[in-house]
Length: 260
Image (cartoon, rainbow, N blue to C red; front, side, top):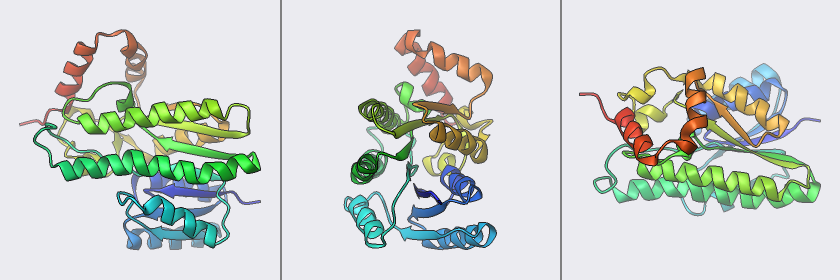
């Protein structure tokens, strides 16, 4: 029987790569993003190539009512969601006190509120059936403070903490929650966040590489998946808890500073 995955931010990047991977496994899809044209192009391509069913929901998740509207639409169509992938998110570069507040407020709404609301909506159905998987896309940014991306790093810290906590709450069920922590990845994120000219995005990994690791980790029910990191970066991540925070913040600030 086909598994149905609901994927937010599915029009590009990691979300699109995850949708393609799931389609290759002959799973049906609900794909969500603001860009209806891109979603419909993806729907056509995946249905033609893999013979699956793709349902499109064009929705701006930075709007407060979006999660409720998505859930109600899915229920009205009689679709049962087996995998919930909360992938949509965005960042923003600059000094916190100089950035437009509305941009950061939208970031909090999308990265935290929408993700939490969608999880709260779909999780009870999974618990009732005693089956289901949730994949929340966080970031290696969740492991440290992020000068010059203060709000973005903070939102991702929330995602990791939230995901791990509910994973433990579900430990006596067959429902799993996996937290994906990618490093710098070749998506639209760098350009839209103003980070494309920083050292952090000098050698990004591909969205496909990250998505493969994420999908495999989700199916295995892993708690956390680190992806898109070099061997040396993986080693560095292990030492973050013992390195003085002042040193870490200085290094992060340097990596995120724009080149002149």
